[in-house]
Image (cartoon, rainbow, N blue to C red; front, side, top):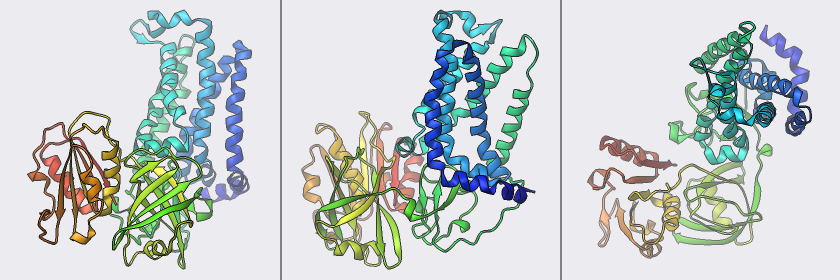
Length: 482
């Protein structure tokens, strides 16, 4: 049955897929046109009805896509942000039209409560207010900046639809009970529960994708590359997307595998940057400085995707920003003798161009006066170093920096020049005078309960440190794993 429906809708599916960008532009155009309702005050009622209709479309799209398996709706999923903007402009015209005519009502108790119950005016007004942050963050830029918090923020849509249904039901309650919105809402949450549980009412067609196929997360733009895997979630490098457990979630926005679609490198939006400087900090670590045409607004702790190409085709790697000076970005990169990118980096010279995409990341320095302890290993010092440079010189800070051998050290003089830094350098495989030996043990570090911990390094080190800190009841723990 589902396959027949998909077959019938296939021409429309292809038409939308090939013109999805232009459909998005058209929806934004309609959003601006919706302000035309202000010219006809009596028609603002219609704008409200259309706003709820668009909201229902947004909410039911993933249900029909993931629970019922209709491919047309999966094709429409990337348009939810444009539909969300259209929904809000229609709702704004509807609510603002009333408020502009009767602004004094908002301050009256009857606007909010009637006989001890919330009024339809209050329900609609609160739904409109809650939709503002969702509309503001309906962009790829907002998704990149908020990461997992973007998904958490947009869960407000469930509260908004409840308020919208209350608004509609209470409006008509004095005449007759409007049960259709109630039934629709109940049905929606039932099927939403099916979606959360991964229950499907169709049989999936198994498609034989080529080895190494990339997969794009529709909500946030994260790309799953089988070559890299997802070490944060214990998905080892070389794991094909089909072999990932069904309970795996996007490491950026926390959605399930059902939100991913096949992706090709040619569709990735990147830019070219010039290599300004390339310096060996030690035999296996280089400092790379690039210059971009446009200035990127980065926050200490964030990273940039680099796209390399060799005889095995294009692949990507992420590197944290050490510092930014206008259009110039600095990175420290470890040259793995068995890494694909090492052979490329060794051949790069000043003036060469590299392909990048960024800036991303939510490993950010907190704006507080709490004590701060930083722990980093190897070139994972990069985001930590950037954070410490951004702190006021008078701020007291502690850094535990560890490497395996003495010749892997770098930036030591720069670290010693950072004011008010209590520096501890560990060498784990050698006993060298002037340095501490052995791994960093967080249990041996005394600090106050308000201390903020910033950990950046290999997953094993970070995981063990986090577990120990949590056992000591520390709650302000921020980490980045590579």
